[in-house]
Length: 165
Image 1 (cartoon, rainbow, N blue to C red):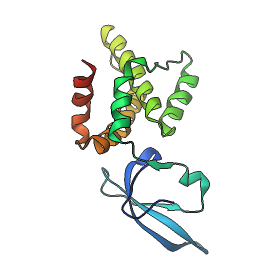
Image 2 (cartoon, one colour; image 1 turned 180 degrees about the vertical axis):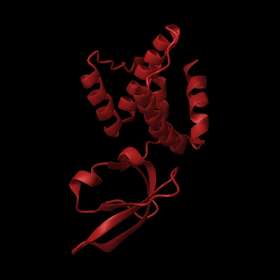
Image 3 (cartoon, one colour; image 1 turned 90 degrees about the horizontal axis):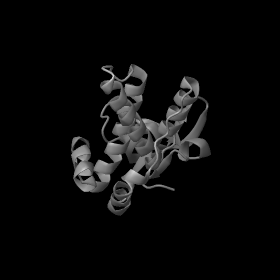
Image 4 (tube, helix red, strand yellow; image 1 turned 90 degrees about the vertical axis):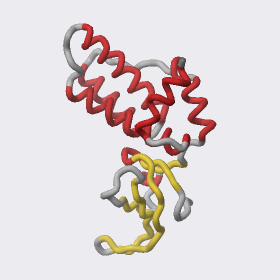
């Protein structure tokens, strides 16, 4: 069980602080809920039923500095994940975003940056759908890396680049 004031990563919401664990009534039943406040999205609050294995499984501890440094050091070894079939590609990219795994996000980012480079070489932009996936993957990854490295999310890209040189 997680604790109040603990920072966690919650699925597509990214880094959250557990503001409270309280009993609430939504509908007819009273249940205990984790009350999560996203760190980088000020306007929202997330309520996660403590007894919901499916939703609680989307919660995990934030990576440590050492874990982030290890991921950065092996980024070049993480494979890309391009699918030729557009339907399979969309499903794959969405699954990677939902995976709650930094390695999957890195793979997705690498894949889409490579695709963007190919498109730019042809004088074309990255399609909107792929651009949206790229921005969301970067947001999730950079928010978590920022938390572990004690940086702002907008500093993470430069930090990664400095380590990869």
